[in-house]
Length: 113
Length: 116
Picture 1 (cartoon, each protein chain N blue to C red):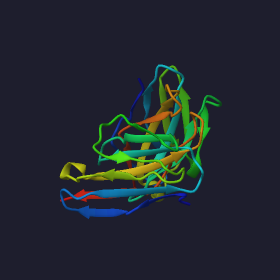
Picture 2 (cartoon, rainbow over the protein chains, first blue to last red):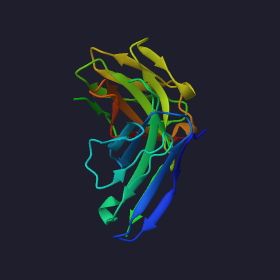
Picture 3 (cartoon, rainbow over the protein chains, first blue to last red):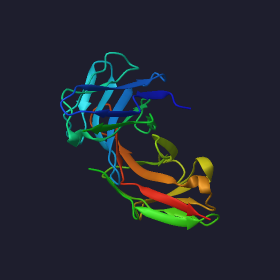
């Protein structure tokens, strides 16, 4: 049962457009994450947050930005989409604790034409 | 620094056969280890996790994994494959990081195919 929701599931958009990928969770988790996934590649962490008003960049450099104004909401924004941004974006959340597993949404598959 | 290596990007087994998916890790501190499964067009779902308790960890859907420190391995097994096991499997390692957010490092994944 999905307690973390991502919208849209699929998005095809032209170069230069501004887009926001939505992510919401109902579990009250403090930690939230954005991963980028390309076929045959490992998941790369691009942003994470460990609470309201805290965001950090991940291991993979990304032109996207994030915000965390509310615990349950962690949107990702691209100001000007490019074909190189074409990928699957996965949002996740976890409870406190270093061994807490991640709960993933179903992802947003973004195609920039 | 931590890293994960999954040997074999594709594994094919017959229905009813043993499933073995390999994972080796590198971590400078005692690790937490996870296996996730991803079905087509879905996010990742936790199969099982190792957190320094028992070295043999049982997960969902009949999967289990054994932590072997001497081999730095955490291989995933299932005695008898089912068609519904066909999916992508990811091994991941986490360790205490500076700051309050632990970060998972994922392997490149192994696609499991189950044939009749």
